Image 1: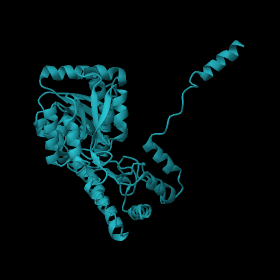
Image 2: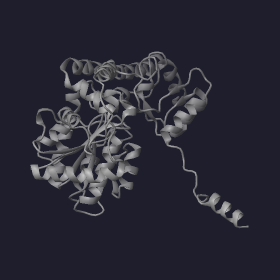
Image 3: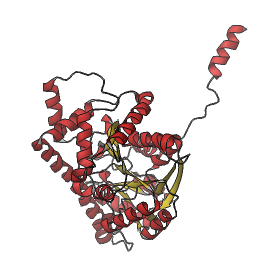
Image 4: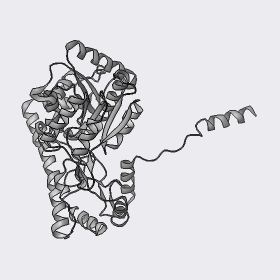
Length: 409
């Protein structure tokens, strides 16, 4: 009897746990993989693909890997703060000549880890408790969960205007002007995910003024520097503008897209501070937060970045390849719009395909139209209509245009 009771107790310990839903983006990939249609297209994954539709590894990364192998590095733990050479490169890449004098920084598990670390820091040290984090509507799907799990109070501000498929600038400004002092405002530095809609430099200037007047803390998430326009300096204009305007910017950086280091989880989190003592204090507390989370960050990816950004020829090669990735995305945007408007003769306005930036196109397709794309055409994307332009190639763009035209006619 005792054995039967113990066996039952062990089996039922987690019996109350319900199965959770699949991640929306991962669910798209699972459905795509099960589809036998040879013409199927996966437009859900936010990872770059070459024109052959296959994962793409930069030649500069391969060159750096060879150098690392020849150098024969040990595999010791990094310090909790991460690799200091990498952090120096990350700050130079982000802030350029306007790099602040006093900056606290820590290596993170890509941009996701940077956001999570920022959320934990806000929760512990923001003046208002719980800290208020304002997200654009919409934002990257993971943002809400990250800051909620960190103990932050998450609200939103207007950003995207569905009727124009562009920026709701007046709504954005009105909401930020009404935000309470001390709120953290999350801003996508470039290539807004999921809409691809970015403010102009003039609009960024106005946002900066509103944040200064209202005492709001700008928190930039920069996941696509260099991948948006092909020019890393141009894509950092908003961050650098805010620093020059006197903001204590907080910045999350990801090196997944612009270096193609998705699985290496390379990122950084930095805080602009007002003194050496403040920078040291913030850095010390970031290390204390990181220690029980993951102890030490990974080492191989940052070594690759260091090799590339340490030597001018290899950095030039990387910048050339980064520009090539961006130009391919820009090119397929033009092709898709031309296919819809000129060949298919669609009477709808598809100008947003080319006016939006970066990896994603917020197509304006309804959930019902997205369902028809998958069911009738084997074209897979998330139900909010977000198209990963990296999945569009010169080989499938005609088929994709036919599919979109069919479900929108």
